[in-house]
Image 1 (cartoon, helix red, strand yellow):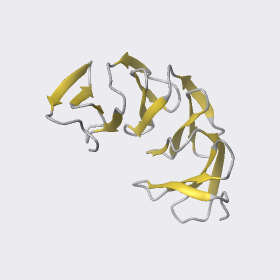
Image 2: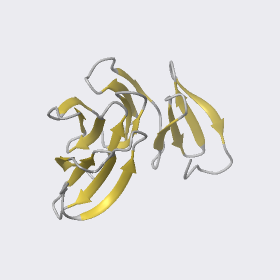
Image 3: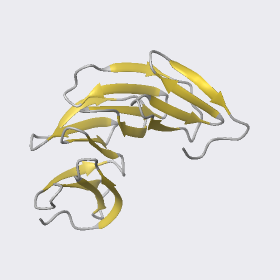
Amino acid sequence: AAGPIGLPDRVQVARDGRLLLIVNTGKPTTTLGIYSPDLAKVRTLDGVSGDLARLVDGDGVVTVAPKSRILAQVGDARPTQVLQLEGDVIGLSEAGPQQFVALTSLGELVRCRLDDDDLARTHATIDPGAFLIVDSQHRPVIASGARLLRWDRDVHEIATLLRPIDSL
């Protein structure tokens, strides 16, 4: 299947075999190519901010559009705006079937389903350069300076290291 033309910025392969290609087409925003596991079908999504996009279990994709708008798409449905966040989105991760988490530069942290259901919001005090991952139980984990934070019921520190954390 023919997909977007340009320079690939990032590639992600989902557990179900789908392939996400984030393509720089020379415009201020990027384009997503979401390929089926057999590569026979491709969906495209234009107007993405940078390389913040993730495949989500359940044939979903979540991405960031300009002005910190979170867009979600499931299957062949049209992409929809799920929510808009405060500050620049600096982290976006899958958090289980049809779910994602996002972190902004202002410390806003959200967990939501792709259909805009089950939304939870909180704030965390973060340092510049903070980043977001999810653990094996789909809980958001934030590396902020030398602190490691986790969000389950609330955001709490789980470790403080001697040096700033630059990767997990």
